[in-house]
Length: 499
Image (cartoon, rainbow, N blue to C red; front, side, top):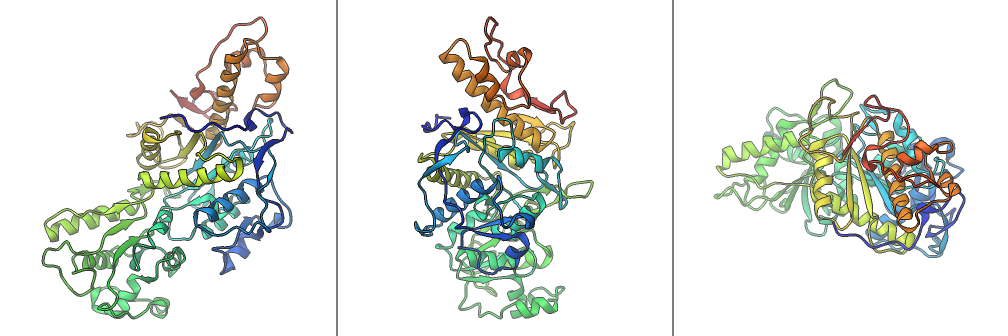
C-alpha cells in the first residue's frame, strides 16, 4: 500500500474541547424524521434527511455531525446540487478525525436475528465522542443485505441502535448497481418482499423494471406450480415481451421462491437477445446476470447459519451449464467483490474532501465483519491494491465460529464490535504516540494524560504498555494490533487475538 495524502488537520491529537479546522454543514437545514415517519414518507430519496430515534427528533445528538456530512457526500456522489443557501460548507469547529474511519457489516456484527447485539450501542457511542478524549470517528455501514432501499435500511437501523443516521452512511449489496442505470433500460429484478426491489431499482434510475410476478401474470404457464397471490396479481404488470426485451438480470435480494425465480432466470439466459419465449441457438445470447452479493451462508437467530444468495448463484450456474453445455459468466457485487470496497472508498474520499478539504480517503479504514469468506477476504484484497490501509477485524458474534480456523485470516479477531472499536482507536493512539516519540525523547506527563483513550489516568505500567517514554524511564513498545482497552472478552483480558 502506498501512503495516502497527508491531512493538514490534527484532530486526533487535539485534547478534548479543542477545535480543529474541518468542514461541517450548518445546522437546522436537514429534515429530521423519526424512523417511523421516515418509513411512511414517499419522497425521501433526494432530500437531505437524517433519521433519528423518536425521542430525539427535536434535538441534535452526538451522531448528528457524522450523519449530516455523509448525507451531503452521498448527494455529491449522485450529482445532486447542494443549495449553498441551505448548507454552509465554511470551516467550523469539529472534533471529528479524518485520519481513519470504520466500516461495519450489519448482520452478525451489530444485529443478529433482528435483535441488537448489546455491545453495538456502546460502540456507536464511543465513535460519536463518548470517550475520554472526546474525539469522533467517521463510520459507514457496508452490508450484503438487500431487498430494501438504503433509506429503509437506514430507518430500521436507527430504531434498532437508537442512533441518528443518514442514507449516506449505507452501502447495500445492490448499491453499486445504481451506477448501471444509464447502461440498461429494461431489466428483470429478482428477490425481496413484495414490490420493494422494483421500487429500489426505479429509484436507482432504471426505466423499465420487470419482476417475476410480471412474467407469471403475462405467461402463467412459465411456472406451472406457482400461482400469484391476490396482492401479487394486483401489483404485477402485463408486459409485451416482444417490445420489452430484458437487457440485464439483477438479483437484488434473496429469492423467496427459488423454483419460479430460477426458471425465469434460465429462460432469459437461454433466450435470443433477452426476449422471453425465444431460445438462442447458441444458448449464450441472453442478458448478463448480476447478483447483489455472493454470500453462501449468513447468520440469523437460528442455531446454524442459513443459505444465502451465493447458494442460489451456484444452483443457477450448475443448471445453466447442464442445459447449455458451457459455464455461466455471472457477476457478483457486494463483499468480497472489490467493486463494493472501491465504492466505499469513493464515498469516504468524498466525505473527507467535503469536511477537511483533502482529496483522498482516510489513511486507514477499519472493516469489522463476521464472515471470513466475504468481509475479511474482501478487506484483505482491497488492502493489497489500495493507496490507503484497509484493516480487517473479525468478530465472534456472527458466522465465524470460535475454534475454527478462518480460510481468510483477519488482522485481528475480537469478541464483539465494541472490542473492535476499542482496538482500532487504541491502535491509532499508539501510532500518534509513536510519531511523537520520534520527535521528542520525552513526552510531558500532562500530554499523556490528556491523550489516553481509556478512562482514568494512566499508570507507569500502562504507559510502558502503550510504548510511551516516561521521564527517567525506558521505552517499551507494545504490539499495537494485540492491545485493546477494556475487558469485554473471554480470550485474555481484552477479548482480542492479533498479530
